[in-house]
Length: 182
Image 1 (cartoon, rainbow, N blue to C red):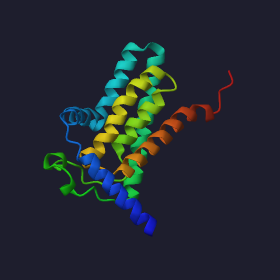
Image 2 (cartoon, rainbow, N blue to C red):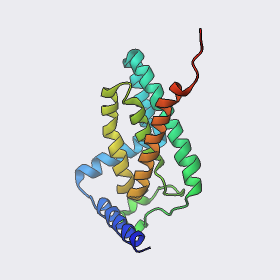
Image 3 (spheres, rainbow, N blue to C red):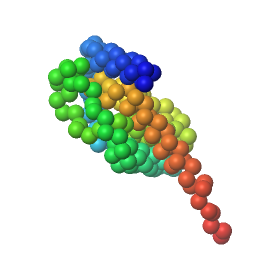
């Protein structure tokens, strides 16, 4: 029990530290990232760009990314959030404008992070350049979820783990299916 209390105190301290980042750079960059990631718009736009400009490789990468994102959303929002009821970080740790419209659902895990990581990790093996390009907003989404008071760092870490698992499942599943003999 003592170890859990120490871990919780450290996570609370880290959450407060991330929330206190108040540079103009952070305040200018993270809100647009949040807006773009809301309802997975950013990842749908990335998939559309890959489909339009990447030829066959782009279409395959986009399809893998969308499939990974969907699996991650089901696992994080449809399963894990229903099983774990965790309160969001206390509002008083954040600026009022950062917490005015945060969700009422469980904080654990971060569905935004799960979707972002799943999309990026599913795209990367098929088109490494696109995966690297998607990694930048993926990291920003994860940081933004803590900075704006929606999640604790462990919620984001769990979302990332779910995203990686979803991407692995999507990339592995076709090889597990029996091949038709023609």
